[in-house]
Image (cartoon, rainbow, N blue to C red; front, side, top):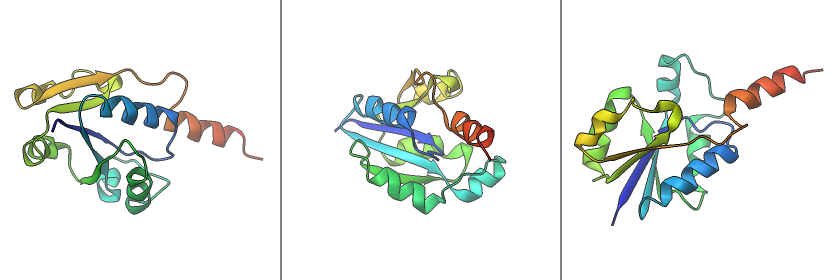
Length: 131
């Protein structure tokens, strides 16, 4: 069985997230999604609208996702790759080059982002449309 892993916050789920998950799943048979915990997001000065548990439940309902695990630190990626016997590490191409060190452990793939959509754009659009 070929295993794939990807990481993210996955807040305000949108078509860009679904496209990433769908394309990531094509690289293997089993897709693991590591999502940033609320504590880790605070360390990154990032605030998610949905809690970790809510984001986890949403991702677990997506047919492309086989397992959801917590992301607690930047440094855990090598341990996750080894622990879960990962064959392919997938990230959006906005991270291109940042995870090349994982090539020592598995294949690293950077996928193009979906044009015109992002969580940041959604948040900005909502803020602009306040009454």
